[in-house]
Image 1 (tube, rainbow, N blue to C red):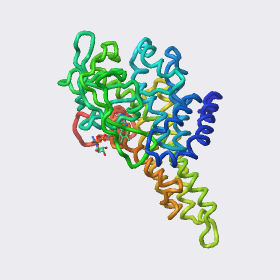
Image 2: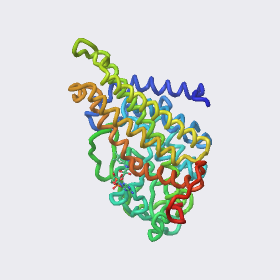
Image 3: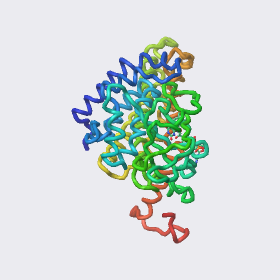
Image 4: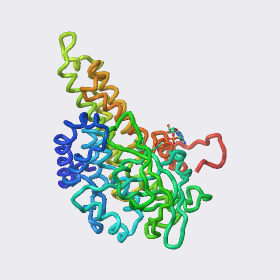
Length: 400
Ligand SMILES: Cc1cc2nc3c(=O)[nH]c(=O)nc-3n(C[C@H](O)[C@H](O)[C@H](O)COP(=O)(O)OP(=O)(O)OC[C@H]3O[C@@H](n4cnc5c(N)ncnc54)[C@H](O)[C@@H]3O)c2cc1C
């Protein structure tokens, strides 16, 4: 077993950490107060080569691995989960296209967005007000009309939408078929595509989400990605991969909470000694460290499986729910260890609590991750031989 990163991966991770130390961590709080998209920081991340890593070389990208993306997301997530989300969102928006579009489609629609001087954005448009976890309830439609589709519907919670020039849209081409009638389209920002209500949030204020309204939008038929009816499958394949990215941001938050708490526990004295010397605090730090390390290992393992074209659903679900739960728990523990100071906004850890909460919700809530993982485990157990042979009472037919 080799846990070592390649030289290229080590250099990328170091570049991302340096970028975070210089541009994200010192400014995240001040930027958060502005409650707007952190364009200068994201532009800089683009310039130093931390974005669009998974776009294949044939389409003008660096063609790097998912593991490489997780290294960047962990480093930037350490500085600010909101800014990391703003930087990482192109990975989510373009992943369905990398999975299912032709190289010609990528060259025409994605390459111009990733090779210019100015950073440009894509947005992943799946969620609607009545279709969250239940993706099959998507009500946006795309009706074929000659060489075009006519698209109507409203998406919500869409990250980077106000900045985006290309929308990856999941719409129904045959609503009566539910999830089997879903299709994916690349929709440039054209007439009929409007930004609706901008969402107000409790955390990750350095990222922006809004509704996207599609009103009689004429989408050229060449913008269909894959075949009609493949949308659900492409969405699931996308999320299987991109959840490692959320797990990586979560790992960064879990580590940051630990580091801030440990630093404080060394310095803060009560009863004549550093509070870290009290076993009650030391045990908390130990558990926080174990959570951050386990989150990192699960995340990198999921990315490695995906990079080697191995089944990844179960492990990307493990990584997403474990790492985001670790981030949440570590953030709350950091507030506790820092006492009253942990609760004040001029110190770093109350922001971690607000930011971490979202990690348990977006890209599939942690309940949905547990459903995915639980179903995968049940399926695997059908042919499992534990070596202990006994007949259990039950029905003849197993669940799978
Ligand atoms: C800040 C932010 C950014 C986002 N960015 C994007 C984006 O860029 N693109 C995009 O398409 N979407 C985006 N989303 C949407 C996000 O993925 C959804 O919010 C999420 O999938 C949950 O859907 P929902 O909010 O409708 O909750 P619901 O699906 O209504 O769930 C409500 C509750 O019920 C639980 N639940 C639902 N079904 C089950 C079940 N079968 N078993 C057990 N529990 C269940 C959920 O876990 C949750 O606790 C974003 C959301 C937020 C808040």
